[in-house]
Length: 222
Image 1: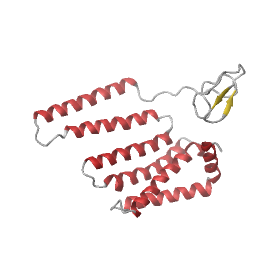
Image 2: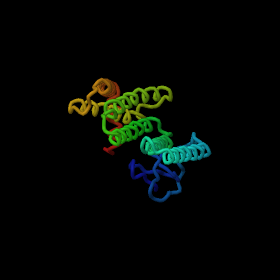
Image 3: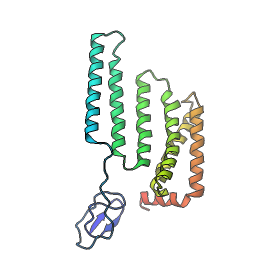
Image 4: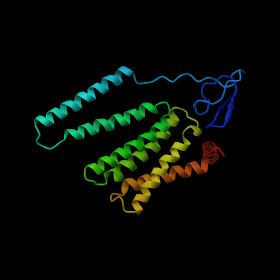
């Protein structure tokens, strides 16, 4: 019989993927009738032709900027910033395409990737602290609000996004730690982020405590 090692469940029939986590099961089919519905293959919302054209235009922009920079060298190697910006854009775009079937997860990945790239940009351009003072708290607060809106619009079950909402709240706790350690000088965005994180966590604990505990048990296989 097929078995999903990730979820720890047996899958009768010829299921090609686990209906819970979509990972490939181990073992051999037992020849019995499928008991779980087969999910339709997700359709990509971005066409391959569009991605190809965007990639081509990105290369053209970078090459033109480097050519102009070499021809007119005044002002330093500003074309490297263009190159780094295009690379950052494509990294973020790749994350969007990879996680587009799961909006809550995509939101969390966006917060993580964009915050890390902003921090690297901040370090590489003479560190000023704007990545921690503005980018991280603003993205984290926006993620909480966006996740709530997406859940309402798409009628998601609380189990579909509760863990990702908790992760967004953790970013708010990080912002508070940065305030305490003096790592940020402009505290208003971080303070607002921390306040939003506490409010969302309190709501989850008071009103969705059972669902939150059940999700942690499922993730940790308790």
